[in-house]
Structure formats: structure tokens, C-alpha cells
Length: 304
Image 1 (cartoon, one colour):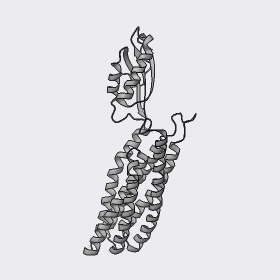
Image 2 (tube, one colour):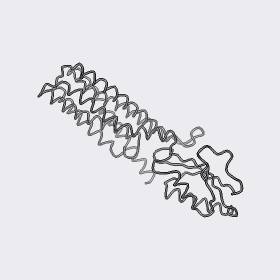
Image 3 (cartoon, helix red, strand yellow):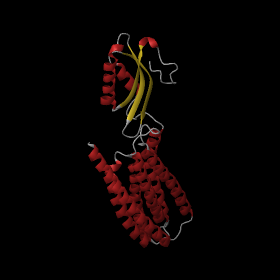
Image 4 (cartoon, helix red, strand yellow):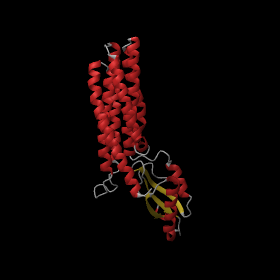
């Protein structure tokens, strides 16, 4: 993909986030007012989700802008992880909000309140249209970006929430069963938790400089040891800079008499890292076999 095409895609994603922010802000205000008049916790919960979406879109937009800043003397890897931090913030808000809604739903189950089903159905139907349209706007960009995906999950959850509110409103109108409102709230909150937990684990893993999920360090070391001239590898560190950039550093022990080939060995190592593990940023320190291992090597890094 060319840089021009990449930047065009980023601008398109930004515009969609701004449009999603505007739609959800209007919807959150309308649902809050309607929820108060109707006495519907599910409708207010839906409004809270949409208000949370507004915050998530603002955070996502700010994180995207910061993530594009070039590297400098303080941030030599650049600011790419700003988007991971944005995702972590948004997902944390989602999880906390979901837990609170589960608590409120439990309280309402114990003490049901009168709900005006007609208002609930009409407003929730409008909300469903807006939420589905917004989720559709963000769907493509969410596939390769945790930051945008967090905002997308917000909207996807609101789409299910709006649908659930409609069902609750219809049941209330037909059967006068008030507790269905709390049940729908709890179901939607649990759905949000299930969507959010894997992504927040992924965000934390990247921020903790964990190894890519699809790369076993032992397999990587074994593959690099197969390069002719490599006697041993130790002091291996493998991590993700962000979702799309991986890095590795290692000490390469070269067989006696092979030091004059170290440039060729390095080229072969880097080629294997790129082709087999999609790692294009590597720092490799070469040592003669008779130098011995680094002293001391960090625990767990003395690969033999």
C-alpha cells in the first residue's frame, strides 16, 4: 500500500469517527430526555452507552492524531502506542459502565418501576437506525486498529442495546411485564463485557511489551539457529511496538572462523525474521564463539 493511499484511508477513518461522534451526541441527548419521561432504565442505559461512544470517539480521534507524530529524542519509536492507550481507556470505560448497569439492573429487578413502553419503542427504534449506521461506518477501519475497534464495539453494543430496548418496550406494552427492562439491560451489559475483555487483554499485552501471539520465542530461536554459521542465540527479547510493528533483539554467537561472514549471516537472519515471523525491526549483536555468553544475561533469556 502506498503512503498516499494509507494517508487517504486514515483521513477517511477520521471523518467517519467525527460523523459517528456527531450522530451519537445528538442521539444520547434525545434518549436521555425520553428515558427520564418514560421511566425506562434500559433506554437511559442505551443513552449512557451512546454518551460513552461520544467519549470513545473523542479519545480515538486524539489518540490517532498523537499516533501520527514522528519520532523524536524522547520517543525514539514514535508515538504509535498512543492508539493502544486510547483503546485501553475506552475499553476500561466500557467494562466499568457494563458492571454498573448490571448492578442497576439487579436493583430494578428487586424494585420494579412503571415504564411507558410506547416512548421506549419509538426512541429505541430511532436509536437502532443511528447505531447500525454508525457501526457500519467504522466496521472496515476496526479490523486492523484496536483504537477504532474499541469505538466500534461501543457502537455495536449500542445497536444490540437498542434492539433489546425495542423488544423490552413491546413486551411491556403487550404483557405489562416491567422486569423485562432490567433483564435486557443485564444481557446487553454482559454482551459488552464479552466483547471488551479480549481486546483489553490484547491492549495490556502490547503495552507490557509482550511477544506477538502468533510467534513462539522458542520456534523463532530454533529457526535462526538453522542459519549456517550460527552457533548459539541468547539474550532474546521479542515484543510488539503496536498492532502492526514487531521488534526483536538478540545476541548471535557465531562459529569460530565464521566472523568474516557476519554480514551474510545477518542478512540471512533478517530475511528469515521478515519472511517467517513478519519482524522487520531487529537489533542483532554478534559475538565470537569463544567470547562466551553475555555476563550476566537476564533470567529466562539464556537460550541454549
